[in-house]
Image (cartoon, rainbow, N blue to C red; front, side):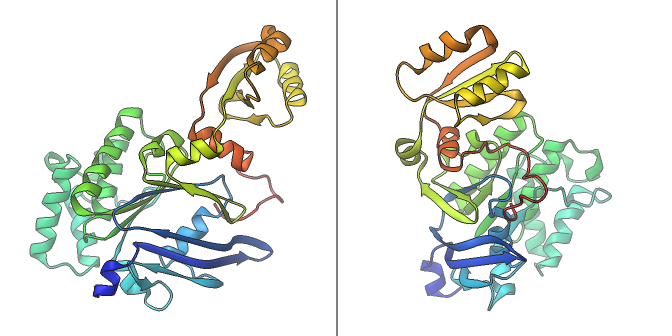
Length: 322
């Protein structure tokens, strides 16, 4: 890498746009991510996250604007840019017929690593994700959490500068999710690795350096978790109505209500007396009610009017790729 590239941002995006037919997936998007940062990209389904990551990973080309990875233009020099990247996809992509070692060794060969470098790096990565004792195990015998750790190890085999993680902990139990984030923090601290993550577990990104919220192909807000909470956070009532009738009545009474997971409704607390008013009018019609203090979830709701975990847009209403 040149000296210029070494001093460049890990990621630079300037005026990028992308269209799929009539759908404008990305609309003049610009952002910069410093080296060594953990950067979270949040958005509802169809917000444009996948379109942006596909461009940065050289899977697709922008219709306008430019993007650089470690100072390398992803359109002009896709192969050079790709060597700086590690990618962990949401869907499992391991060869379950091969052993742990064989999956890592094959990845190293794809990146033209020497035999000695592959052996060294395999041992380092297996130690990091605590899979050394499973070196010769066939992947199909591993648990879901172990497979996810192996995919992270594989993404780092060729010593990339930037690691893209698409829903890295989806489907894992809380303990496995915590372990994944622990490994990632160790990596970032020890190797100056830049981590770009998308996730539907909004609580996981509270320790990220920067959070970027995107919707309708546009960046709505960007900043540290604390700055975003201060600027956009609100208190929320999280209520579970007893009946469909109560559900409908609450939505009518509070027009800004957002439907969350598992039948919950998320209602903004307008002022100090909001809780008393809600309980006085609907208390007997609620199965459960709690109050959330200003959080990243309330930031997300304030900016997008949607829940991060909501279902994909209905047919005919798709706004863009996720």
